[in-house]
Length: 396
Image (cartoon, rainbow, N blue to C red; front, side):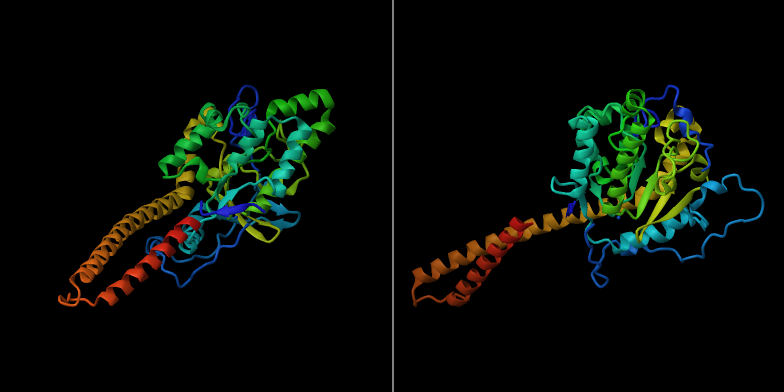
């Protein structure tokens, strides 16, 4: 299992960068969280007062009267209605409670011995993925488990470059980086998944042309299997879906059908504008899927929807940015206070040593205000305390 430490494109880009001829796949008119966190309920949480949830209201009732052209895309499985919420309910009830309970976030890091890592290596070798493509997939998965995750479509056409260069070249990843920074977060704080990791559009097209549709389908299903495994392992509580393509009838990805999870992870502009949040159950794990839009499509084809997307990210991610900023400020204050305290301890030790030397020089003829043996006992206790504190810092 991965260790936890206290830390795509509509076209060729899961981050959404190549546009010509394929942006129609993302039409906004399309209908259609691994370790254990101990929850110290009695422990002091300095942020609790700032995160008080508003009174809980009842569920949102659906209007069942009249024809709904999007009804086929609003079901979780055959015969079962798909639970829907709104972002307002998520940010009012779910996120504040999650932050109030959060003591120490867990950082997801994929290690070479993890099953998911080995699965990714097998996929890379079988389909001839570049080493940088593999590393970029792994780097995008880095982030805090308790923070909302982001779902894109497939990798950037620049994912053969080192990670930082890929981000600079990718309009979608650059937009995410800029937007998260304004919310006091960095890319490395947020887990980013591609629906089809390591599957650039060019690879899919080349496979289809050279090996036929069956082989292309095999490629897509093995790629999506990595995302399925990633979600099962990371178990994010909130996932912002920014892809609208894994639904029946999509021009480019419509061949990837009969996969219930892929359809459930698909968003749409209609649901994004109506601020919907879909609840999914992944083998007993409850996940809230915020219905978003692909940043590249919004930037290039629907700039009037930019405000909708920015507001969505702001509502979902700002509370976590504020929580992290306050936590960082408190850590800095603790470090500053600790440095002063250690300085005083060192000064006290020096003075006690000097006091002992003076007592020894004076002999029995001159008595100081403190018994020399008491001062020496205190000096030894401070030395033991300092040794223990050094060991704690080393282990930390």
